[in-house]
Length: 244
Image (cartoon, rainbow, N blue to C red):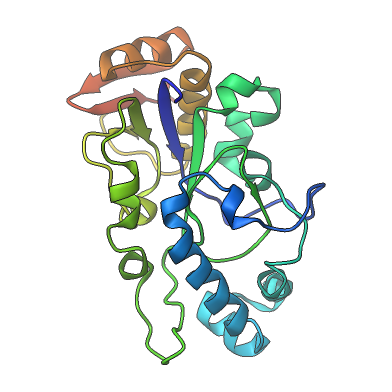
């Protein structure tokens, strides 16, 4: 078991392709999530058999319609480690390609399709956000939160290591982790930051992955050593952005 687990949010943008074989659910971390993973994959592939309907349900415009094809090929397309699949602001700041194996092993990614996967778990490119209501075979439209139920919470609860949950609210709601340390990014005036939120969380994740902590106080010290202005507020790491 790693000395801590850092949960990252997913990103809508993802690298295409991969150098590894097709998805193997049995190879993924957190095996107790596999039943829901399989159900979601089956339903997403079925939805993707009708591209116009899929675009409407997934909220995709004409320029993103090719992502429906990605979903239809979930079982056969190449895979790559989750840390290398997701892109975007947080992952640019994290720069996972430059982390050693031990550091990468402390990172995991929450998602609508897989629940939570280890950073080195091999996954295909896909498109499914936590706000989508994916149709069931009976035509009903449950939320992702309802689809996952308590499975994620039960899977992650009871771990002995410190969990730092950097997922956004949408993905935390798919399965909250009691006792987890969270983080927020604020301005010097104390206002919550939106634009640079992901960037600073990526920097925090990188620092913690390389220097694991066993408490929120230790995590704050790690963040400070990495050049972040950080403080503890209960179980929350508060990062203050530089003044403009």
